[in-house]
Image (cartoon, rainbow, N blue to C red; front, side, top):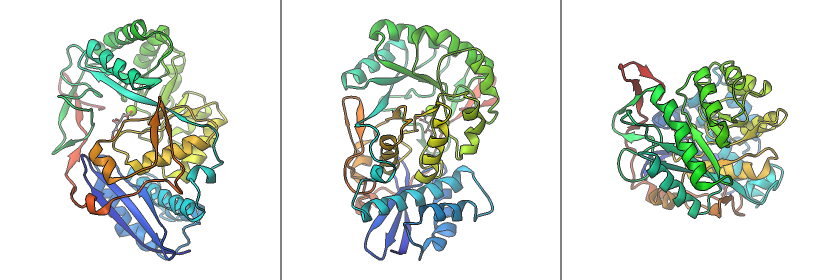
Length: 402
Ligand code: CS2
Ligand code: MG
């Protein structure tokens, strides 16, 4: 089989997505997600201008060699743009392989290690009462694990909480908006939120929380320690992770499990975190981490150190990436949990898919390959719209991590 053509589709059914379609001389095509929230066009250009010309004519079954060709062969390694582009190609090639063998992707990755993939939902509210109402709603929908974020008194905008009515969506159309941040009110507030959550929902529901890179290691240690009585499933991104050593400090102070990795684009970003057992869950994204080939290796490496997976599944990853994550989740032994932030109906019809949700679990479906398609005619009705993630400032105006 030979790759005859590849093109990049950019569409915005509710939000922007970058999708690579790779075609072959046998009429089989594969899809890959290359969406990088707020930087979509850079990945599209990297693919169209630099990678696709080198892809034409290759055998799509050579997933390992093609991955190495674009990673090692570029001389310039890593970075979110490069790795999202490689991730899109890798995903599309695995999709082709599954379709060519007429089998769902998980069968090519080791088969089924489990029947269903436990997912966690997002619950949020402008204050504790509203956040807990939203938890009740998601529990009613069958979720066994729920991430809880609430507005913090004294801070006008908080990560994870929509500014108005409607679902939370991190990217906003137009230029970046500015959020506000203060650590002390947040640290006072979060233990109260989870005390109330345990009081109302008992011990069985898994509760999670995302700190979204905002604390120093010692502040994260304090938060983790104060949350111990409420036994969270994890706290996520307690501190920015460029300094992997920072997690040693957190570990010295708390037994609350830690999840990190949605902004990583290489296993080297997590190398010290994993081999020192400073984290419990690796949250890399199949797209941004370089695709299925790279993430399967990362998960196998993490398994040696009792680190499980909790792959990123926000709405800025397209249904193509969601499907890829569900196939990997189904196949690997050290799966932990999968994030599930449902796409809008507009997005779902542009990307018809076989994966499904039932009673707190998701299933990749049994269609060959990834089991996701792209309705190109419909996609063309939603042209790209400039959108950015917000930036964040402390109350004195200093820029801080969003
Ligand atoms: C988040 C994301 O899903 C998560 O845990 O941290 O919503 C993140 O903010 C976005 O993916 C950024 O693009
Ligand atoms: Mg997160």
